[in-house]
Length: 371
Image 1 (spheres, rainbow, N blue to C red):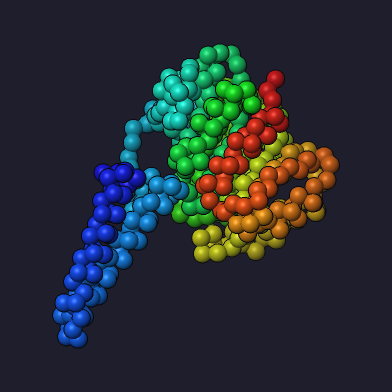
Image 2 (cartoon, helix red, strand yellow):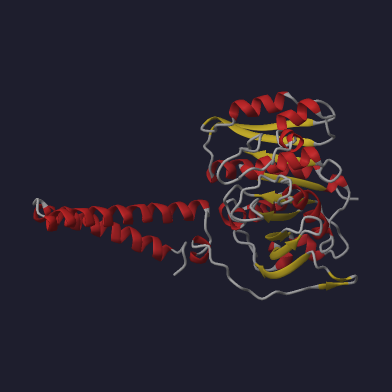
């Protein structure tokens, strides 16, 4: 039974209920002060609480897609076959297609020319040496016209999320498909992955001195690998980057610092400075330049404004970044263009981001073009 299956959740909930009522029924017999009675109370209460926590944990995982499987939960690696595609220029060693799957949540999602296709890939950075799994969404039009090139958006989830969050919990492919079908946005390729490309460390998309070159991977290696395999526009105006939480910080930073590649960056519930905590370790290694350039406010104050469009989102109630978002937006100077989505209420969660993703994708589509 899968970690996210209805049967697992229902079984956990049923067992929690049975333990609760069983404990209530047996409580008079466990009311004594002898060791057996005390041990019985401890075990009954412990088992009941454990199953309650397990039930709530399973339900939260179904909603927020923290873990995709039991193996993912327990940190086990799963070996899988590798399919290597060869193009006219030989094998593209920077990107390997590992498999394909339909687009859930759209009519005809199993037929590429109708619903598009999701490809599971592995990307190896030629500069950074970082290797990471990712998913690539190809719209139906990609299969209809073999000569057409497409604008592309890199999509980054939060830490410690999985790339599957972007497919299932946040529904990026289905949203992009439906918005394009309604004529609200142009068809786009989405490259979806998590920011944790050297797990379990949270590198905040920083080029760590003497460590993982994560910014280089996202800003240079990933676009180069995708361009070497798919029909994407290679000019700066054809690329964007969007993310939520940690991924939102990454998206804004990458767009600010690399306008030669990215025309737009959208940060949903983003922070504006890389934190230093137990999950990140020492990201800067005493290098003040790296530390300063990891502060998005500092970049706006001290670097020439890049020719790029930036979208920041927050909510007046429920988000801790509202005041910082207002400060960030106020710092924009031409030719940088600032945009926002500010909700009246919404927490730091999938439900909030699902309200922001459709308009954010439309906004990005309006800023990307291919020649």
